[in-house]
Amino acid sequence: MSKILDVFKNPAAPCYVIAELSCNHNGDYDEAVKIMHAAKDAGADAIKLQTYTADTICRNFKTKPEGTIWEDLDLYALYQKAYTPWDWQLKLGEEAKRTGIDILSSPFDETAVDFLVDELNVPALKVASFEAVDTKLLQKMAKTGLPIIMSNGMTTFAEMKESIQILRDAGCSDLLMLQCNSGYPAAFDEANLNTMKVMAEMFDVPVGVSDHTMFADTENFSTPLAHITPVEAVKMGAKVVEVHLMMDRGESRELMEKGEGGFDWPFSREPDELKKMIHMIRAVERGEDVSYKTEIEKKCANDTHGTVNFTPTEKEMASRNVRPSLWIVNDIKKGESFKFAAEAENKETGNFDSIRPAGGVEIRFTDVVEGKVATRDIFAGTALSWDMVEF
Image (tube, rainbow, N blue to C red; front, side, top):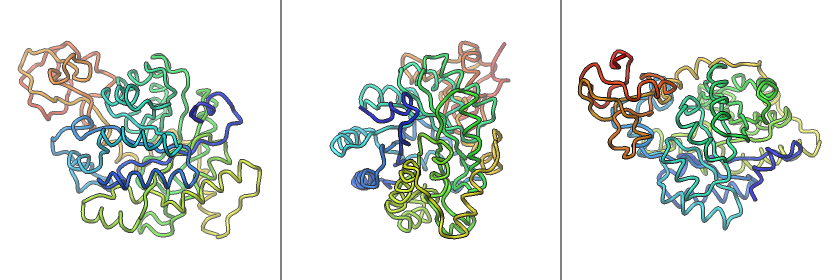
């Protein structure tokens, strides 16, 4: 049985450590296996995937994530290189069983939820920060009955509260919230770990951290301090820690500079850094004194506490532009009815869908748009706006 279930049932359960694989395999299945084994060897409880394809997370509409570290790539090209093929995920699931490590994933559309539940048999589901506003996806995930871990990155308080309520109304009884700054990478003084306690009290949930801090200098990417934020979070009551893991930072950085891979290198740990982090977390749990040796470590540790904050930071505002919204995905004629693709009997017959990036009507209004008719001809690749919908 997965240790993740203990987190929801036993307040004294040890912190559950998730190593996020994401795109750090750089298109190489064997590299993905190496990362999984490195996670296990370092003491992680789970390896986590992301389940999407370029066509399920967005479309080839030539949109770019402006203001982020990936702004030179259009989203479709980025996800074509970054995704983890679903047949790999099944093989990784078998490898995880042999290795003795849990396998989790974040689904990015409704078909991914079915895949993770019916084929990969994950013990829990993870809501990525960007998808916290995908209300239809949240409902689908909650109806599985599985425990759900949700990151709150870049959300406003109202958005976070709405997402939690949607999950609970749709049947989610085991929910854990992660304090997350969706800046890539995030600065230590943007972690705002003090938010965890308030979030736990307000929503009666266990809490943790999804961490994207790494460098003391986020401009020059110097002085990696991969252990600081997770260790401070556990001192403050975090029951889940999620961090990105890669094998070689230098190699990944070179790949990203060429536009070929390594897209998560600025906020990913190497195996030795993960091992050190977990060693320190377990020391904290044993009640041992965990102190820092250098002044920069002490300063960054203090910075992570921050304030209670339910407002997106400046860097997160750029990330919000990559969130999903409603887009026209098949041409629509004037007077034709809107059909939500994710819930259509044949997804190809749907004409609007929840995909990245932002710019269209918010996904919470899907049921309002469904069944209405178009005020004019609309081409695929157009962000849905209210003036396209006849009332």
